[in-house]
Length: 336
Image 1 (cartoon, rainbow, N blue to C red):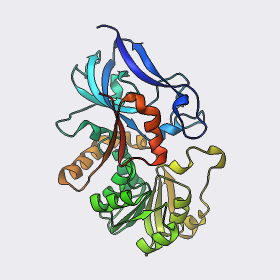
Image 2: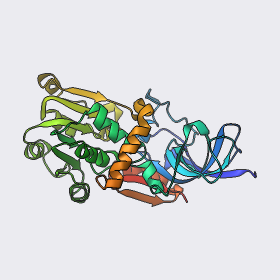
Image 3: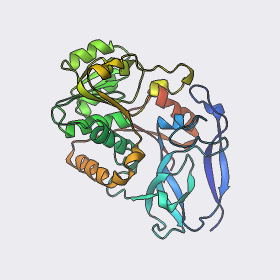
Image 4: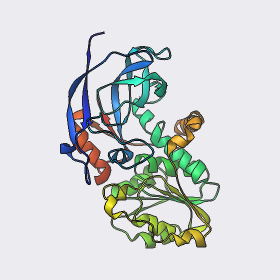
């Protein structure tokens, strides 16, 4: 096989605040042919996720930080163009941690086969990928949603929140409310996704609107944002409520002034539980979860939306959309 070239986005320096183009090195480089156990992938779509911001810090996390000069870590889906792993053949479609690059050399044991005859490839980075699995385990395991619950989801128009709210409905929640950052997104989660109500956190008073839309209080709060809405939700918990800490996008770019929860005493008074989680905690159950999510997709009780930007060279500006909110549903870069 001739030498393969890959167009890559590498970390040039660690950002303080929202990353911009100066923090990235972008260009072509030669990559090796597969060694034993490896697979060479031509990527089709790259997933852009809030967790990527945390991987840019030197601080200890659930994964090591992306090193200076290293290809930016990211999930991707694409086609096998060469393989020295017995489970994968040329032409098969796979999903895994490809990084932000057009071609990726990946250990075969980290990949999963997919099929665009079953669902479009972007779905395997959305409802049938890590965002969908995160939403699923956050609601079923950590949130333990049950029949008759009232549920609030922040960032409800995003990749995880939009799926999480619909999963709560499929699990029998009596009322599901979502917060989002524009009237368009609020209409989307109610009219297209089936949420019972929405709150525009940019234009409405959070405490008042939660009281109006969830007058009996919250059994489950699924938090993707942190900050003010976490505080407002804590003030509206019911007895033995569950607070699911999935993310805190409002806090990711300013670790010097992180806003912690002021209303945490509600957890004591309401005998409630607040728990963080990482989706990989449930890796052994991915197959079961994907099967149930697939059933909801097929039945039409779970819908999703993608925002797709074409061209890997757009990565610096596309990544910023995570923080500006210029997206609906799952944010992806189309590579080919």
